[in-house]
Image (cartoon, rainbow, N blue to C red; front, side):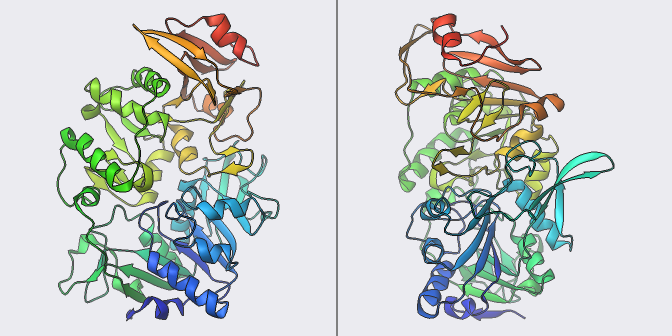
Length: 503
């Protein structure tokens, strides 16, 4: 039977050595007050300590002094397993200093492994991750020198087929943020941007004999409609009520509190950007890339658009009238709206449906996307892509590996060079005024996020769209299929490459 508790009381349910699974998505839906209570107790008593933290999409507030950053920095955590570390500013620096073990697995594979635990199964099989960094035959999921546990990802064969088998430590503490608890302890997510892995995390914790702690904004007398009760009260041990300040209409636009027609998406994007202090960057390079990449879109496509340069695809899809004729999706579970970006990435404006994250990755993993537009740090001569790691820094693979693994058409959107690249466009002609100092097409990538070999085996169409040309993946390597007007093919393209391409 659940109990209403204060954050301090609920923290007493967490013991030294526990494995906590957090249902957050980067900077959204974090149970902030519970994280603060953990830190306060740790500072006073040195407990809970030796924690393992698991999160599909990672957790943080884009601030190194908030959320879980304090108790992670001060030594309460021994091990961290996340799909993405981007919102954890302090933590991702400490990882590279070997302060604790840290493992990076594809977001969807963590989500599916959590769901497997919920069903009493130790792990989840997936073809996602084969031949990229997480594959134990390559680098494995360990990020730093002390992260050597090889139990989380194994290469296996079932009926003669290759898979990766993803396992997580046994989750025994569920840490969840919800909207409301009714008098029976049922938890609704009406004012939340997503439900993520909430139900699976709770079921896994209970299956492992653990505790479920849910922070909510309010208590309600009248039971919610059964379909809206994501977590049944019988699974809940502690309900922590922390009243929230009114969100304001900008944030409510992301919760589905009112209908937003597609014609108003731009207006709400601007409102949300002002509220979150996010900046929209105008770039000739990004515009050229986005405009060309958009030509690959077709009516009725189911789509995922990555952050950064790929976001310009939505701008030109709107101009061409295609935005209303395709279905956009986001990793956290949203379908049929317009993905928000910046600090509220994971939320969606005007979503038609928001379901559990594991179900979204079922769609991605089974080839349910028609096309995706993704960024890239590096591309090598074979067509492999590094999108998660640079020397001395990392953010994590996130949903990238799942999204690109079986999508029918994969469009990488990247500049040809970076750091100083300056481009002009006049009357439809492109000129490279100043070349960037760092090439993005290299002989061999630092780490593989996307396997060209696997894509060829899956018969995927793969394009690499830049501000000056377009390459396509073939069995013989990269093929130069398009050079834009104004670009000198030899000087601006071929002479800049450290390898030969098919022409």
